[in-house]
Image 1 (cartoon, each protein chain N blue to C red):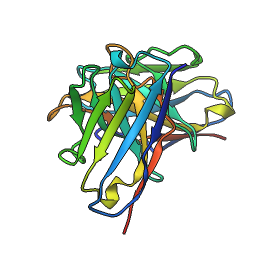
Image 2: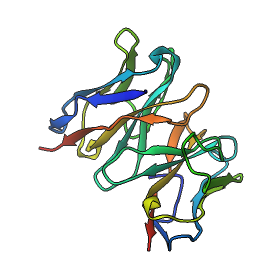
Image 3: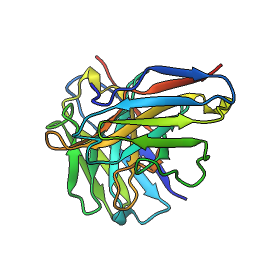
Length: 119
Length: 111
């Protein structure tokens, strides 16, 4: 069974940094592209970033470009999102999600980790 | 702001057919697949439709979808109370350096 477990969220001040992690299990992590998607309180879904199976970045949303970095560690079956220079607009529930082979759909999602940016 | 526009709400009585539209452009729907996600309050989204009109295993056949060059739609036939949820369309967008875009979301209410 595919399982994705996010962690690393919390309360951070504007200008601060956080690193989110997503521990993957139940599938061959190295074979699949992975993504981060966020959802602000009461809001809709926003794709944040994606990374291909071989660690090439698929891309970043304009809203996070230059501040966030996606990466993956195949030895630990873990996806990361390094978030720097946080702003209040980064406050959201952050999900990691897996793509099926050869597609850009998101067929499995974690339960999310909450990030709150506030002074 | 999202480049895929959905109506904020849709509703129907049990058994009715409800359709949700998703308006895009040639940079997303023109050359890329559309996906649909279902989300219940307090839970993660779930893939409902992939590759324009394909249902993952376990998704009932009363969910169907279609796509044109600049728009897409999701239909729920035989509406049931458990279909009350938020629904999002999504697609890869080739504009700028490329990005995955979600629709604005539609809340479906079963009356």
